Length: 146
Image (cartoon, rainbow, N blue to C red):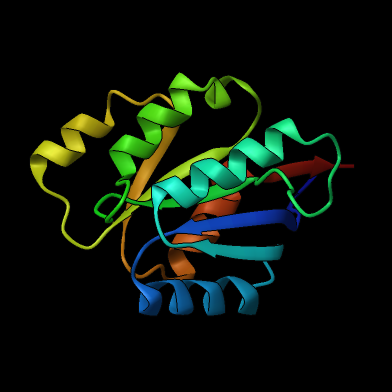
């Protein structure tokens, strides 16, 4: 059997830092991780997008993401508020989405608090590296073929 990763349909970058979004998007495109990469500036924009993605039957403008990179500290709606709202709306029960947190300065308190969210698999420091992406793809998006 041969293990391989497959290209994802959509990756959401939820971060208010335009430079981080630019660098992460460039890296993900360079590594051909996804057909589409969308950057949203805060948790509120992400919730609004996901509401449409999960409640609009088959509208190609609102694809369901395979992977969400979520910043912890953002204006309007931070990462924790996003996770609370995501859970409250039942979006966390809907499917296979992998959520990974991004942070430039994770406090011990933040890291402990993340353990309360079963949908969050891991946290990474900004900005992502090729090593991070290879690890993520191998761990969460491995496919086995004959």
